[in-house]
Amino acid sequence: QRSDTMILAHVSGAGDAMTLISLPRDSLVKIPAHDSIAGGSARERVPERLDKLNVAYAAGGPELTVRTVEHNTGVRIDHYVEVDFAGFVRLVDALGGVDVCLPAAVDDVQSGLDLPEGRSHVGGVQGLAYVRARAFDPTGDIGRIGRQQRFLAALVDQALSRTTLLNPVRLQAVVDAALSAVRTDDDLDYGGALELATRLRGASRGDMIFTTVPLADSNHVDPDLGSTVLWDEAAAAEMFAKVRADQPIREKSAKPKRVARGDGEDAEGATVPPASIRVRALNAGGTPGLAAQATADLRAAGFTIAIDPADAGGDPATETVVRFDPRWSTSARTVRAALPAARFVEVPGLGETFEVLAGSSYDGVTDVSLAAEPSPTGRPDQPAGRVRTAADSVCD
Image (cartoon, rainbow, N blue to C red; front, side, top):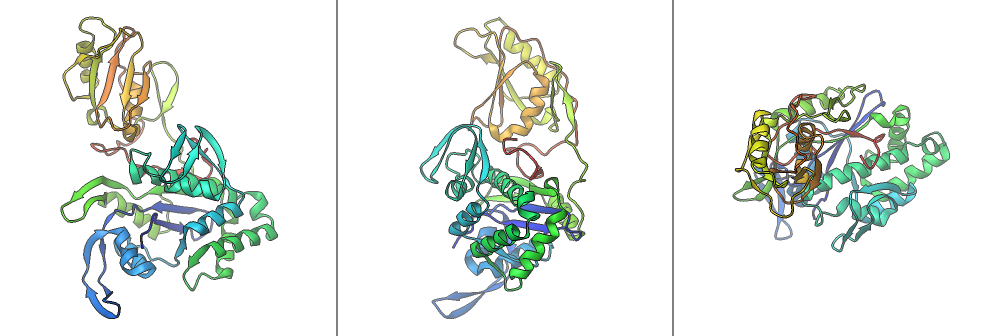
């Protein structure tokens, strides 16, 4: 057996908040020593070892999975909830479906996801395809985690609606549907689940936090295990320490900082320093020396020049265009602040270097002031550390 998704969920002691932390299934973790059944009945002791988190479920089911998560996070697990595919469909349908949003239309044969660009209201079948699809997404499991968090946030938003929580009959019906759709530990019976839902009655949507364990490398190649995911040990330890202490992983009043763009508009805060971002300037305007000038401007603004300037080819263009891989979307905020008049185009698979195609209207680079602490870079931008809530728009 394999597990598609693992999430560590913490309900605050006061019952006024809930934090859900995604744990990538390929996380490289220590799996505790355990008994394995070999040849049908013979029990064999397997020593502690480094392996993918998903292997814990395959080797020892829920019990070993819980022990592994406890061992690597230091967080005591009180309950276990498992949703299979059919149960997921029933659970979504019981809540009347949810809204999802896609930046472009998707017709993915492998998962069955077939939705147009923008917002859609989906039932259980398409909802399952939305959270499981990965072939169409160049970021693979990391991108899928982001969609899962958006979907769960929408599901929680639906579950926390006044028509659900303030209506005892409706609340009981939803709990009944949820329990019929999931497998739980023996201690989480009907009464316990209903009590848990009731405790969360005072929580607002903004207090339902979704994030991912901080990552150091989403594609660490282990010689024996292949591609794995490495946690950022220091940041992860800090996050789990807050969970153990029943402290919020962010202040409730925290609001995203913003940075002024050169065109007078506000842009979401830039957190990645220019020195951590690789850029290459190309002359798309036909003006002699334009790429060299853009390169000098970008270097003066602190960006790392990856490749020598060159001509972009094609007909001369007026507009300046920045091409970038969507995996580096957080870094793109910094580049947007530096080139506020440019048009940004996502190019999946382009890699870590941003291509600045300077048009004839190119007028230089704006100095960037970071709006918050620098983000880790040198690898694709991770959902790790990013926080969303059930109050956020599904299209954010």
